[in-house]
Length: 192
Image (tube, rainbow, N blue to C red; front, side, top):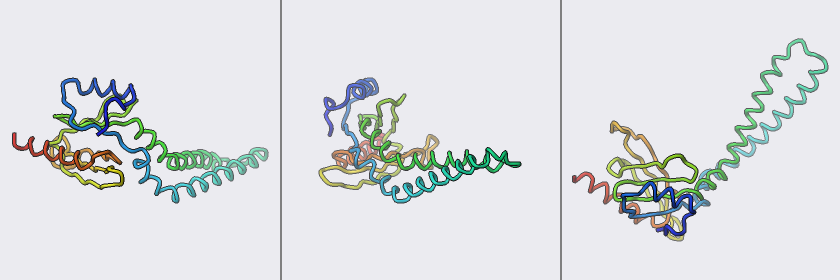
């Protein structure tokens, strides 16, 4: 379990405001390297797509530069290709950068299990995500090295029935303890 003193000041103050009248049972921060790992597997696909999109953009720009002095009779194809190639390049660049965006976000995130709910709080978010244990419909834990684990949680929608939200906690400390606390809170809520 992470100690509150190790949290950055902005996260610590946001967590204190969020959990004013609640008792924190478990507190953990994701391992940023572990959080970005699933997205790194996509790099062999996204990096070539980025190169292809850049080549498409360069060919479009070269064609546009060549067609401009001639004042082509129908420039509509260039009008369509330029925004398309720019959008494709931007989208491919986003997917290549996504693992590092995920890593940065994980470094600024904290999870807390209180006596009433599971909280996911990231610095810079307007509000925390909050989940009641009695709404938990799916829980899977994967153990990793050095006492870390990942929990994959699914919660019922407001009306019940189908899954309404999911939360993946990648590389958190004491994942087995968190799983036991969640199952205990879930059972306690059903007994009431």
